[in-house]
Image (cartoon, rainbow, N blue to C red; front, side, top):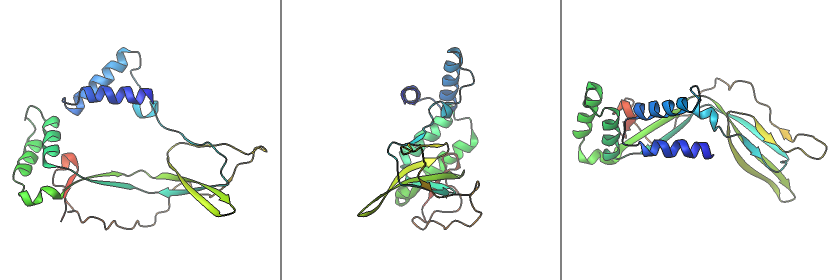
Length: 193
């Protein structure tokens, strides 16, 4: 966690610079420290830990998670300028023009969409008591889950899942009706219809 915080602090200190420049600076800094091939996500990947022995573990595939968040015109403008500080990229300049031409009534309709396309396992602990079962979400697991065994060294019951998620179709989200085309593709920002 200390390494993850140091990386976040370093990137925050360079937040006014474009993202590619920030990343290049960080890579150069790590190379100077003797770690030219460090893969940052692997350096501080979290391993899920179940500290108490659960009665059962529930595993299920999550095919894709979609995060939709509301963004402001000012946020979009700042991010686009950070991507092209010299104003040399015609694609970014066109998106800035689109943003400037947005009608005031549409300011509340900007949404950034992030999709994690790789499947992950969702992990939950189940504890059984006289009052019933308690279900506690542990998290999403891209790595093994560590579980404390009982005194006999036995693992808790667990659901078995296939090595790959099923190919069934995922239900469409109905919470927001977004246009099919991105309004600002560089930022994955859509307009709510």
